[in-house]
Amino acid sequence: MRDYEIIGYPRLVRLNPNIPWKTRGNGALSLRVGKKGGTVKRKIGEINGNDAFCSAAFTQELDENDRHRVYGIIQDILEEQARTEDDNTNPGFVMLTIPPDNNTYKKAVTRIVPLDEVLTTLHNLHATFEGYKNQRGLIGATAAVAWEPGDGTFEVIAYRSKERWGTKRSVDPASVKKIDATFPSTFDNYDYRNHHNRITPNSPCPILFGIRGDNVEELMAAVNVVQSEPVDSWLVFESNQGTDDHLQRKQVIQIKPFESVITEGQVEENPRTIQGGHVLFTLKDSTGTIPCAAYEPTKEFRTIIRALRTGDTVEVYGGVREQPLTINLEKINIKHLTTVLVKAENPVCPVCGKHMKSRGAEQGYKCMICKTSSDEPVMREQPRPIAPGFYEVPVCARRHLSKPLKRIITPTTVVVATGTVGTRR
Ligand code: ZN
Image (cartoon, rainbow, N blue to C red; front, side):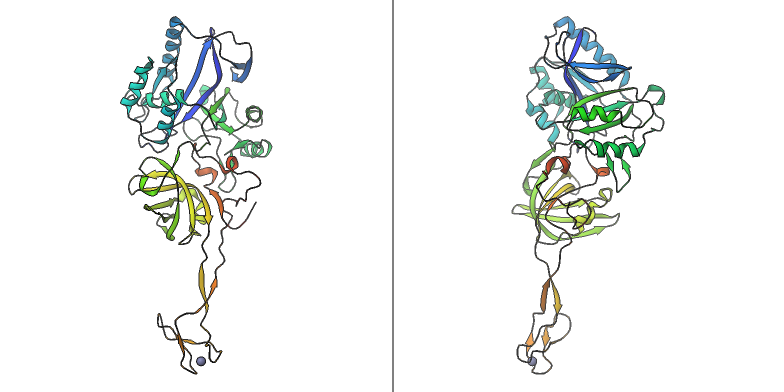
């Protein structure tokens, strides 16, 4: 690539997390490439011990011969690196001089896009492209090029040396906690309650760790704070992770499987815990009802969901499962808690001033002295263990695209700490 230059940060774009046939992270990478000659350079990483730079501004369009060469370079990399033996890996790459509009991205992050539609877009834009196996990788590749960062974040990814690929990763959790404490713009680093180091992947991929955040300088500094096996190389990506771009605001009747939604309504019946520790409740709005689930892997988040009561007003955030149609909760905004009344004592006789006696289940009450009867016991308000506000699943259960509350909540907003019922921070 010595005749060419990367323009701006490379991009890591996540797409619809609810596609049944996706690869694990459903992600795609994109780069803008121009001729060498940028005057303002920006460091984006280190490769083989050398600093890697991008040009901060666009340089010069590639001619046809250049494009042919770049195409060959990408093709070689992809054919060498892609794990095509995995059934769910269907790689593809696209090369365009004019990117598709942002709507192409918006569709691919929120719903299921047919391959035909993407092929039409690519033909209309005179793209050159290569799709392998079932060609579905072209959908993600095209969407990644179409993404216009609005509310974007960054991830610095550190790679392992080749001889360690597939072996156990060595990353010191104490140093990951240190990043969390030192760099406030980073997020999803460590799950303290579940003792889960989130920056290290579990798959046998060449990635050693990835740190996410809003500030590139902090991410670059954080790479050197992590105590780990030697880092072979590292690179900063601009990303749609942590943006909630996958969510669409919908009424219950509009909700479709394989999408992700934000829906407001009332809790129709008290939550129940089913086998496996999953917690379910039914949400109701003026158009219909839908079950909402906090599955076992969402750990302490379930405590919040269990504390909901019939009549509470909530806004739920989550992916939609098909069978049965269910919202898999990622976050919840408890907007209004209903007043829950419980029986305090038997009614007091208005004539004698003494407590009446129960006449048995559902039979009401009767004064033993003057025989006055009543159906209404004395009620009191039951204190609720939760407060209105946002709650999210713990770091160990968070999706790549889910916007952490850390990125939503300003310090003036009342926040309730995840999982610690009734505690404000
Ligand atoms: Zn009486």
